[in-house]
Image (tube, rainbow, N blue to C red; front, side, top):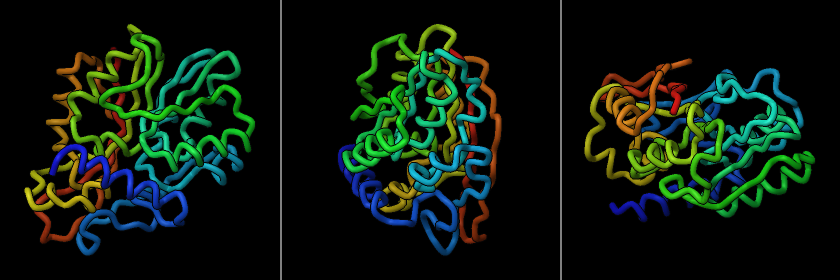
Length: 249
């Protein structure tokens, strides 16, 4: 499979979730080999404005990165793979009118939903852009914080993604990313399954390899703020974890 084929599969998957009630990595959902591994989030957005949750939570996340991002008034925050906008809107409230929250997504349907939610919620300091994480339409050294929720595992070139994150962050800027990683090697036949790639499984890197790529991109002070292991059938040779990783430029 080419990178473009993978991206097409991901776009198709997430365009369909805009009009469907089910989700990839959200509650009551089996990702990947549905009989063997199930990814689900039970600790959703507690304490968050009910209007934001009702409008923008499609249940696609595997963590709550905004809870660990140390957001402050006046900051510029970038959300990678922003979907319907829930993490953008949470960040926009945290940084206030003197700050800005930018959502980046490559799926037109998601961006349309996010912009509709923006107008519905009256979030004037939220902005949504179309683009890919490996080549962001974002100025270098312009962002205080990066957040992302169950998205980097979907990116074909993760080294380039973290290099781009390093580029757009200001010196001393930080990222907080909730993502899926593997414990043990994912077999090649799983890697080649587009449905499993779009389903947050096939693109997951081994946890130690993932952390090494982050370090090689130049980031420091890596810290896993939260993690959760998902149950798998004994026939599966690998496991999956959701981790919320923080690091500084």
